[in-house]
Amino acid sequence: MTDKLFDKYPLDNIEILDKSLAQVVSLKPIIVPHSSGRHAKKTLGKARVNIVERLVNKLMRGGTGAKTSGKVIRTKGRLQGKKFRVMRMVEDALEIVEKETKGNPVQALVKALENSAPCEDVTRVSHGGVSYQIAVDIAATRRLDMALRNIALAALMGAFNKKKSLPESLASEIIYTAKGDVQNSYAIKKRDESERMARSAR
Image (cartoon, rainbow, N blue to C red):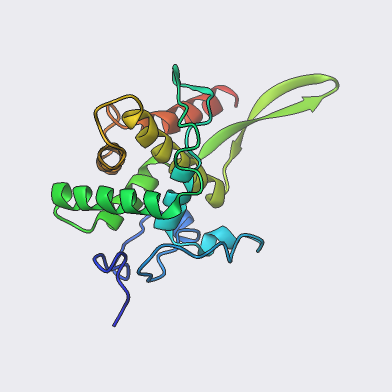
């Protein structure tokens, strides 16, 4: 019998259409998404960490205190190191997604990552004492990192100083991003912004 995530959601029937992301999205059957950091010091080890655990890890980082999209998000370390607390929040968010979509919420998460992972970015290079930006293709690992970071940040911003709870905010962002809703999805807006800057730097 295959292990189900949180003893509820099967991971063996998840479809990944983006072949680039399929290399780095781990859907290894696991009940509790907690690997105890055993992949931390291995080269490209995070590619073997379950995708839901990676989302939990991104949420634990909390607010940076920096200004993001005109807002300053400071969670004062409330989530840092509290993995099981964040894991329960993610489980609650997946339950909300399941009720809304009537399907496997992990499939919705994977679809959201596919829709929000940028294909191009800019980098700064110096030549002859002059610095300028050039467009570059992004590796699959970075594409996934950026998508996870933007979805986690959208959830934190949606719940910060709001009546909305973090699980509700995370569920909304996953649903909007999975649907490709450009108006309501912060992660898709950030993807478009990154690709627009890359196009202008060509």
